[in-house]
Amino acid sequence: MNNRVLSWLTGVISNPVTTFHEISREKPVGWALAVYLAGVLLVLLALDTGFLFAVFWLFFAVVGIVILAGVFHLAALLLGGRGGYTGMVCALGFAGFLYFLIPPLYLLGVTGGIPVRLLVFAFTLLIMLWMLILYALGIKENYQLTAGKSVVVALTPLVLAGLSGVAAILLLLVVVAFVVILAV
View 1 (cartoon, rainbow, N blue to C red):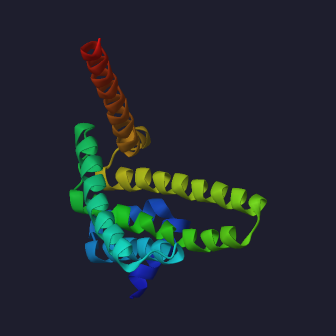
View 2 (view 1 turned 180 degrees about the horizontal axis):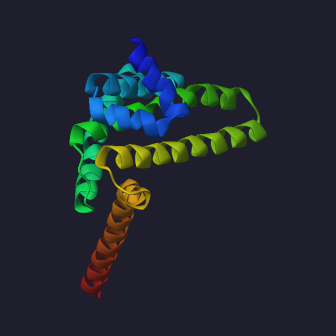
């Protein structure tokens, strides 16, 4: 691993705006995916998953980052962004460096009592929130958007998931109503 990659990894934590600007400009896709998959693999190892389960999740992680970058890319372009898809993949990959923090927390939670587990849960939520903030910063730097538009883009997958959940519930209600009408 070269010094530039180490600088990006520490920069994700210490100076994310400058780091994401540089990553979006240079587009180190291979390193970004390596960081992301290494983080996912560490989480899987900490959870002591089986080999096939781990392979499935690593494949799912690659598909997930490709789709998430696509959703962010489309949303950013709709809001006037001027960046590329590859830069978004790189930003997401390096934001995945925070996955490295989860295994030690998990192991601490396994060995501790309920108060420790609650603390671990709270820290894990903070890490996920921090990743969402890093996503917004990566979006801002990659697409040259305002902070507000970047937050909107970062929240787009959550909104889409919520809307699809509402649509699924409405579809279920229609099906139930149809079955009830047929049964009467």
